[in-house]
Length: 466
Image (cartoon, rainbow, N blue to C red; front, top):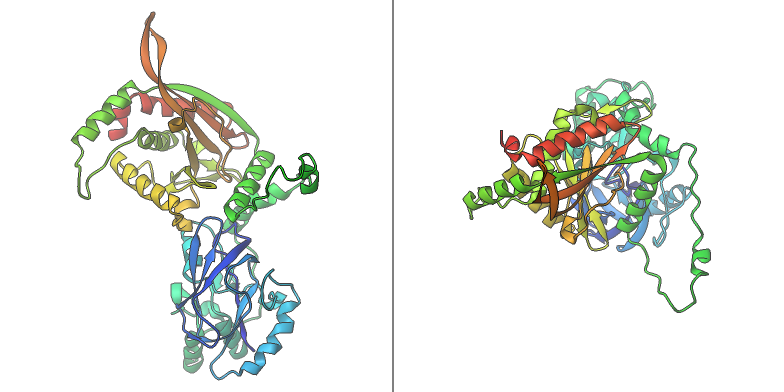
């Protein structure tokens, strides 16, 4: 029976994507690890690798097809020696669960094969960001996920071999055909007790809790498109279809405002000492080579927020219905505007990095974001976010929390203002910052403590250097 190659989930939130390009054609032989296609998500273009060997018997979804649902068959793979006549046998089984719009032979996997996929290196990239996107693994008896190719699972099932006893030699540790055959020859591998999927582990339950909470009891019915268009005279507008990024931003913003109880805390920070320190450090910085850097005010803001979360660890948390996730790392996401939307690349371990390391990493990530070349592990995760509109002249604003974070810091423009100090009026560089808080995680006093710690680092920046 031909093996279906399924549309992979390249991130934990991915539901559909665009099959941008096929790098193989019908009749081509592929081996495990060979890049066979490129998939466009809302954020990036990812390469997809084959997890088994065989011949591409039929391409079901043409290149350029948009809106291909995850786990939809996109091609059929013939095993060695398998006749192309069997391709028609696979079609009825696949088509029972529907297909992808625009596909030449619309098809989707049957319930028995919905966990089969060919995510390859792209899936590994997604899981590197701390998310579990195991779309092509089976469950072992102890609840762990086993990554294996469809052919390997079938051979193991026929031979009565427990895949959890095998070590995969395929891409990213996947169990492939040769691993099962070797176990069968040597008599290794425990006999399988039965094809049952284990219940999710405690960590998996926590990971899925936010999605369940978001779906529970909240119903938002937007105005239908035809009613909106009825407000405007025909011919006075044009319809620009939403791309994947815009759709994702819209969905996540609605989810955030509907499911997260926001409240806002604002504070004024004096930047005179920070500006002086920045000027001195940049003046002494190497101008060329790997050690060169040029610090921005935003680099100090990233470091100050990370250190503030270190000092107030209770605010470095995420809400789930199963329990509070208290994060052990401080990873700060920073919003970067691009045409048609934005990315939020993440500075990992921001509290442990020097200002120059943060500056160079942020510059590199921002450029990759503008070029739309970020990998999922570079923008997924994070424990808080920063949105800085100061360069646009915005004095103060309230940012929408980026789920599943519990906080986001909105940073306004630095400007000279008249301030009163010791009874006298003087001119100072001031910056307004507003912290948006998830009230389920961060109470008023806790948010105030976090902002006070942030302000202390901003106004005495030498503390960031020790």
